[in-house]
Image 1 (cartoon, rainbow, N blue to C red):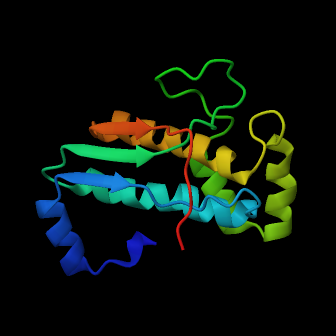
Image 2: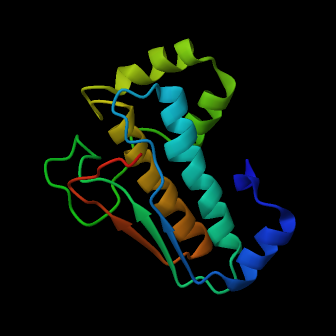
Amino acid sequence: MGLEISEVDRELLRENLTMIFHFAATTKFTEKYKKAIELNLRGVREILTLASECKNLRLFCHLSTAYCNLSVPVLEEKVFKAPMDPNLAIAMAETFDEKTIETIFSNFESKDAVCSYNFTKTLAESLVAEFHEKFQLPVMICRPAQVIPTN
């Protein structure tokens, strides 16, 4: 946790960052929920925490996907209510074993998501909105229709 950045480097970032572009995620549609939550939710929360500490931040840009919020008929330019609290999802993934997490979160499939990827990306948008409201972070969420992995 804490992005594994030394305190000296973190202070340097706090003082100097003006923009953060957060594009990291697992895009593997068959990713286990526990790992997807760790990467696509906890990772987002950690970078948002850093962003909230930055003294000169002008933009936090979060890369999402056009394939989140599957239960809404029209994907408007707003953050939709998430199917659950993303912080609770993180806490559960940190507490329970992989099998239990798979059982719990696979229940969201077909209603709110078809896989761990779009489910966690939906919850991540809620985290971005939460930090925007709580810390007045200047945020932007991009929802491209196509994202490709790199090796």
